[in-house]
Amino acid sequence: MKFSYYMPTTVIFGCGEFDNAAGRISKIGQRALIVTGKKAMQALGYTEKLQKGLCSQGVQTALFANVSAEPHTSEVNDCVDQFKDWNPDVIVALGGGSAIDAAKGIALGFSTNESVEDYLVGNKAVSEVDVTIPLVAISTTAGTGAELNWAAILTDSAAGIKTSFRHKGFFPQIAIIDPMLTISLSNAVTMETGFDAFAHAVETAVSKATNPMVKMHSLEAIGLIRDNLPQVIQDGHNLPARTAMHYASMLMGASLANSSTCLPHRLQYPIGIKTGSSHGAGLISLFKPWLEHTYEFSSQTFNELFSVLAGRNCQRKAEVLAAFDRFTDQIGANYTLRTFGLSEKNVPELVSKVSGSLANDPAGLVPGVVQALYNGAIYR
Ligand SMILES: [Fe+2]
Image 1: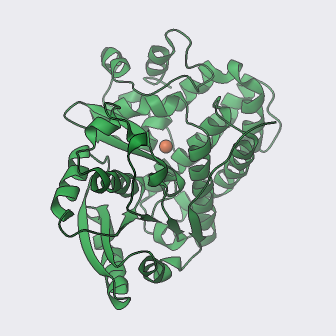
Image 2: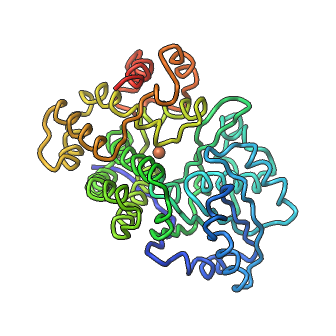
């Protein structure tokens, strides 16, 4: 056995930890730029609470509350332009994966004084940049794992590309994970982000880049998601179940940093750009066709993972697919490409927009697999 595992982020996990965030941030910087979405955090009063807390710690704050659900490179560039002269010494992301990923791009922008597009698409080598400004991630959804991951997923809408890039400086210095912040999530967001965490568990374990620690965490996360996702969908105020989901999601963030996702994640990006559907929703449409095409390339790992999901031994493809159907029926995850208004005629365009490496997927290099998965995602 031979592998490496890296996780430099300090995890602060627990109900009520949001109340201690300002004190922790004050030990990192004195000029905090808060990066968040356009509405939810303000409507819930979380942004104001954080600003007041920082003020009482003697930390100056500035607010950039203009991150879309699919963060755009233009938003990242605007933020850097707007606050370059203010000169923040810490960036605090408050929100789900969108705010956290945007904050990573913003940290890069402050470090380079250049727009991020060239780094995102690889025209300039991001690895040669020294990202000097520290990040704090306050995660308010249970799914993306962005708080422990060193990847940022951004959309360059001018080029019609959504893709990810990685930098060790994108690891937050601290991740504050307070399950109480997830209580207010809607049913749809809870289900779709919860499915994202499930997808991370399966994909990071099946990926060619996996390792024994990643697999161990996947098995743990799938058990937690099986037991708790249906509960939080039924009752969003179930705090023990919310806590278990936030924990599972956080574990998968560490796995994303130490393995890779597979075809569903590569293929979701073009669907999200074209239709505005959420990351989790697109994954739901792709996941069963992916299981059908990929099972035979990694049957033992799929059997192990889906035995946990089923709560009984799965040894055959039909049993794995049946366990998946039971799970998705239970949580109401039944989207297809038709749900997003897409049909066979859109498949060539989707195929042409797939970016990033497919090589870590066990079936990623099979000729025609991308087209086959999109075609399979039209119906279920
Ligand atoms: Fe994801």
